[in-house]
Length: 161
Length: 365
Image (cartoon, rainbow over all chains, first blue to last red; front, side, top):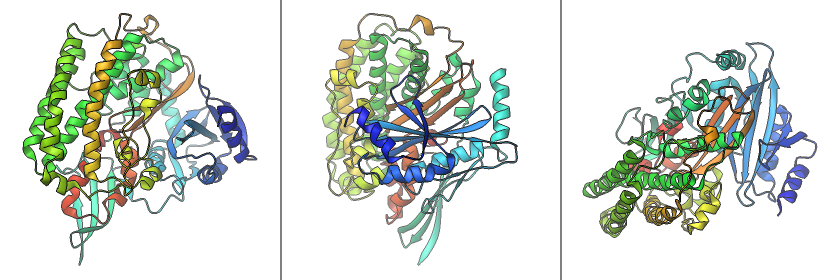
């Protein structure tokens, strides 16, 4: 399958769920933008779609941009040596707001620890995780639970200094 | 009769500070629960707080045993965003160090597993050769761990005079010892009986949990990032990934066997890479005084000795990184650990854990 047809197939599979697509950095990879509420459905489609042969969720990366939290999911099709990057942004208004995102560990158990890391670092709540997973952080990573808004403010301060 | 048993957070059996809570039925583990977070370093956040040129010493602390990989990973991410040109000389020296680190890491693995299996004498043999590898790192970078040698744009300084000669000498020493390793460890009947049939990982489980590196390749999963970023260089050196094809999945013995074979392979690869190290700049002149990196992002993966190590780097054009997100090969294995330990005997716990070559340093980054 060529580069062109692979991404065509991805777009066809995720039809109706994609908001936009853009190149990833200086590479030939594409970022597919979706709505945050659709991540569970998208992860299920990518898991069930046998043509794409997606074998792994490599990473979930979270960062703050323009007063919103941006989450990127890096899926790998090891058969075609292609990466699919799914991204969405969540705007938050105040420091007490808890940002909720559906967990993808039901289909991709390798995401379990990464979701926990992001939850503790950015205050994102990943709802309905896979109950079979039995791993936890005994000690909280930060002394108090950090909301995304708090983190954004402290991070901006660092960047300016 | 079932009872409760807890190991950790500090125990010589464990690969690092962690806690394993187990419910036992007799001697058999009925269920296990893993707790992490005792070694949290805040490494990603620390890297985001520092200016670009001072990040490398922090990143090399990801896992002091494998500093070469973390330094290389971060450098590749920066180079992709900033478009630095890395010379062939610097590239091949980087690859030599990667393979040297792989040998050193696998030797440490063999030393640990041979000690836990009761073959204490052979563990000294592995440590003896590993010392020579660490001497080579000291010669080239001045440090035995946390080298701070690979930087964005190339190398911090050129290869030390006499390094390549000492390298060849060291590799010859390891190559001549390899048959001895096979005899004292892999052909040792006690070692064989102790490790066979325990800690089996099926191919399906390895794929489902996203396990990479030797742990996956021993189970028959073709995953090797040496075919990724440095594909051309590795293929030029005649590299072929070692994958075992076992229908019932890989046990602890298979994983040990594959690591020993990888040492053999790395020796051959370094001998090839040495031939390609020509003359040239060791560092891109543009990269010597980095203040600002243009806005952009990159996602790079490399093959460390434990598996796929990846980094997502985001720059917003400031003096510091906006986001440094590292995913380590031990993370997916940690997700799998409670299932892996189930239905094994508790007396095998040291061997079960050590055969996975876990690093808590990487997990609690």
